[in-house]
Length: 495
Image (cartoon, rainbow, N blue to C red; front, top):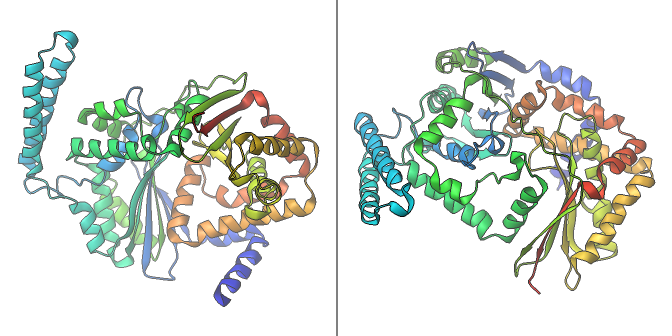
């Protein structure tokens, strides 16, 4: 407890200090460089412990999934752990030939299936058997999970990856004396990944969708919100993909996606911890510079039409009722982004937020309620989210009415100075907490680099929070919290 109190005091002291000064000190520990192929590195020295955190950030996510192939970004994330020609095979030439036989068999099967009513059912059954046999034959050459085992056996911790709407991240920590091993392993999976066990892993991804959405009422509700709020923009689609798309993935689809989006200029790597920047640069030139450059992939061009009326949807389930309300808002580069972050803290800053105090503590109509500044992504115009979980014996309507009343008050009643000061301090403290760990800092550096073209925005953003006034809160609430920009989805029991 004493340590916690001291740490909290230090955090709040830093939160109240000049972040411009903190940035100047922090910059002394940062080394940045871009390889000739376009791959960008951000190196931060922290010599407190002999550990290094690595974060490889691909500027591609579910929003970039091709039409009819939703979930492909997530599928590649899985493939990136399957190893390379040098890692994961007992005999790569024979495995490669066996993998081609799988594709040949699959081609024949699909050609027959595509004949529709004229397809030969007996032939389809034979081809399905052949496909299974070819997959089993290729699996004999696979050394399962060798890539991840090498990392874990050498002290790697926190090995994981995440596919979001706007990005895909790969990350783990290594002892600092395993620096060169990381460069070898990470460069190999981006230089020459082998998509072995592709159809087995496709089944794993399909099961993930079943567990996270089809068997999860909250997952169904979240999916319904995006599908209802976005008509044209690919934020309409779920990150895990639609089931029929997942079931139809082919190996060629994943390879084409990799070649288009995993070019060096669409990647960045942040390394934070006990690292020598000069040695990191030498190893980067040795291992990553061999990856051939490629054209920058184009961003999403589809623009969501202006919403001209409130939208609603209902998901029926015997589960606990839940309501999600999304208001259309601009992307993270908007001049109102900082204000919307402040509004989120005013509404939903734990037990001091307006929503908790009124709906949970005072009126006791909700078990839980709050706000999230951006979903499902931030790169493109998205949603400001509010959520409600009614208390026992209370209805969604009884929760929704006071929540909307709070939003209306924000449009006409100025927030007091004490509340503004509190939420700004909280935003600063939250940032410091995110930067406390090497892994957290590495992730944030990459995210801000791609969002704003400069990781320094991670620090200077706090100056924008400081400039937010009560008038700004009032203006932004009136601009975005309007019925015609609202989408409401409800998880409700059948009557």
